[in-house]
Image 1 (cartoon, rainbow, N blue to C red):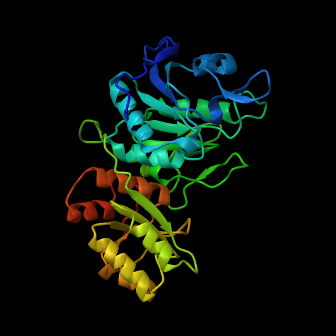
Image 2 (tube, one colour):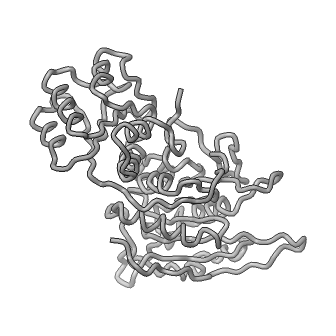
Amino acid sequence: MLPTTLPQPTSILSAEAASDGRAVASVLVIYTGGTVGMEYNKRGELVPMKFEQIRKKMPELRQLRMNLSVLSLPEAIDSSNVVPADWLLLARLIGENYAHYDGFVVLHGTDTMAYSAAALSYLLENLGKPVIFTGAQVPVGRIRTDARRNLITALDIAAARHPVAGTVRVPEVAVFFNDLLIRGNRAKKVESEQYDAFRSENYPPLARAGIEVAFNDKQMLLLPGGPLRVHQRLDDRVVILKLFPGITERVVRTMLEIDDLRGCVLETYGSGNAPTAPWFLQCLREAHGRGVQLLNVSQCEEGRVIQGQYETSAHFRDLGIIGGDDITTEAAITKLMFVLGLKRSPAETARLLSHDLRGEITLV
């Protein structure tokens, strides 16, 4: 359940306009929790810090030519505890503050950051400003922390304008980590012990950070033609069914016959292949007959679903199963929640699931 009263931003840094009269950018940092905002207490335990005190931990923030505000959720969330209601709250917070800031940085735990970034990409329709997710593998209080570099660069990207056109440089939800800016609904966490935690196998990075940030403008989404629309409904009556050799009819039926199930992301082999056992196809046929939307996603990190390329996926077309192309599982399950939440007809729901909504799939 969403709170009736939203937390309000607190200004932590004000900058003066440049000598040539150029205005400074205004960026809102939304702190949800995660390693990036942890510090050690007197007993040597990691605990969430009051993020408004970040200036003490990062004095280099004073060198940024921007107005910086922070908005912290009432309670910091370990990203393993993130639920769809948190995504709706984030979308609402950005919507409420959208007119007052040039860009947004969302500080988030790494474990479910890809899910949250994908969900926000769908909820924020016609987004025309940067919403940059970032975090850290090492707390800001540690000597070899990556928190400083990730936060500073994310802020830089959130404030960036095109040097010629003067327009917003990154008009979409993205994840910045280590030295890569990745489209939010293309990101996947692939590393838990190295700094390069996120990767996008099926889409080029939006930018690379070296001495300067090199933007890949051709890969960015276009500026929207209409005003921001913040959606506030997700349907969580969904499951992910990952196939494996030896999966039994009992397991598949138990998953697909959950009461009131509305959608299933089916993680298949290779280019979308699955068993052809009669019982398996019958389970899918019955689920589709009950109105369950079935979205076929490859277990491979790179590549795409091509239904019908092999005999082991040819049956899917006749069963009404939707090919997910090169979508990630994170983007697929959040897309399923979003589209089902729109409450459209079964035919329109299937059409939306098969179409590219926010750059999450590459249509060929």
